Each structure stands twice: as C-alpha cells, then as structure tokens.
Length: 284
Ligand SMILES: Nc1ncnc2c1ncn2[C@@H]1O[C@H](COP(=O)(O)OP(=O)(O)OP(=O)(O)O)[C@@H](O)[C@H]1O
Image 1 (cartoon, rainbow, N blue to C red):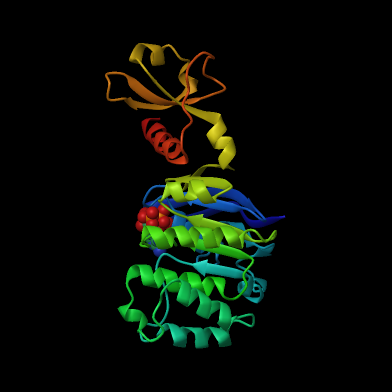
Image 2 (image 1 turned 90 degrees about the horizontal axis):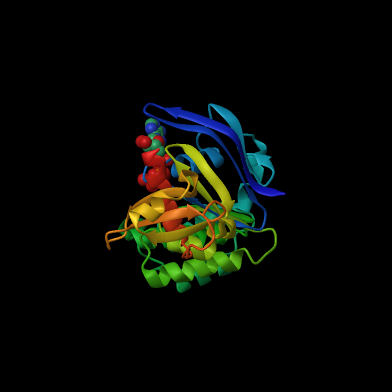
C-alpha cells in the first residue's frame, strides 16, 4: 500500500504550473521532495493536503482522497509541518498544548511536554516572540504528539541549528521504525535527505523529473574527471552534464550503464546528482 499517491495532478497559476504530477510514497518509507526555489514543492504539499484544489488529477493520503470529506476524519493520522508555522501569535506553548487537547482525540500531553523539553522550548513565551527555529520546533512537537502515521514536512529543518537538526532527523528516523509510518519531507539540505530518505522525488519547473529509490540513483550515476577530449569521446547519452574541474579538464556526471568500462568513476552524493541534473535540464 502507498502512504501517498498523486495521480496526474495539474495546477495552473499565472506564470507557473504543476504539470501532470504522478508519484507515490510506499507505506513505511521516507521520501524527500527536492527542487530549486519555485520548483513547486510547497504547492505540491498544499495540493496533497487538500489546502489547494488541483485543476485535474487526484491526491490521496493513507488511502483517502485528500479533497474528500472522509479526509477530515483521518486528519489525526497525518502530522503536518508547513514552511510557515501557523499558531495564533498570542498563545504560548503551554496554551497551544491545551488547544490541541481539544483538537486531537489522540493528543498525548506527556509526549508533547517531553518534546518541548527535548527542544528546549519555553512554556510561557508568546508564539509571536519565537525565533524561526523555535517556531519550527513547536510545529514539529505538535505534529508528533497526536500519534500520526504519516508526516508531511515542508522545509521542516530549515532554520534549525545543526545540533537540533541532527536530533530532529533522528526523531524522524525513529518515527519510521514503526512499520506503517511514512514521511514526505521537502528540503534544500540535500545531505539531510541523503541520510534520511529511501526515495527522492525531484521537481523541476513544476514537473517531476524522477521519483526513484535513493540507492538506485547512487548506483546509476558516477562522477568522472578527465580531459575534455576523453569526455567528448564518450557517447553523448552517457554524460548528464559537465563542468570545468579546476585543473584544465572536465568533471561530469555519467550514467554508469552507458560509460565504457575502464573509466575510474567516483561515487556521487545525492547533492552531486541533483546539481548536475539541474544543470543538464537547463542546458537541454
Ligand atoms: N497562490 C498562488 N498564486 C499564484 N502563484 C503561486 C501561488 N502559490 C504558489 N505560486 C507560484 O508557484 C511557484 C512555485 O512555488 P512553491 O512555493 O511551490 O515553490 P517551492 O519549490 O516550494 O519553492 P521554495 O524552495 O522557494 O520554497 C512559484 O512561482 C510561486 O510564485
């Protein structure tokens, strides 16, 4: 079963469109949604959560169409952190907790209190006086305190200091140790996604360039540094994109299956793969 399914989703804004977006996140896995500024990640997450209505196509979470009334009944099962935290400005963390007791049947005040302590969040400070990082931490604490099965996180680690970010990544990892728990997370911090994710979905100008298993991507591509003549001699389909290597030669991302044997290929990171694919897509 899939935790998330988007099928042929289209959404048109003046000057920008989400085009025929189809991908799925299998239950029990973590999928990273990546793409440049303005690629459509937040719009995709809003469409998925039913906050925006698609012009065509369907979105489902935990098997329920997210634009249907039935989705309201399972909202408890989905923990959401959007890029802008959304609590009333005058409330403090203690009061937010009390509001949530009335909002979620499965609200666990003890779990919430433990996250507030773990994140070093003050109980009595008004939300309007929180820093960006504190706002994110509060959103994450709330999202995790009503026993969700699915977490949908838009830039949830942006603005967190490296130590807290590492701790939050570990918390997300712990979360998916339960078999039926899944996460969709958008981020610009590709090294975080490399550590965390099973799948990477890559958006470019409102289109999905791929949604693949991370290990498949890391095995599919290799990095090659050589003279311009040697690189020219490769079949063009083997070379995704290239750049000067700083030593008068060329560094490029190549498809391992199309590169001749005998070349010394370096293992890329997810960041290398995404940077070269964006470069290749711009040059195409
Ligand atoms: N309500 C709206 N009306 C018009 N245009 C919109 C609306 N919402 C988003 N857009 C446009 O959709 C495009 C994609 O925006 P989106 O926020 O989804 O990108 P993103 O990938 O999340 O970017 P970033 O990494 O900068 O957060 C942008 O060009 C934005 O201006």
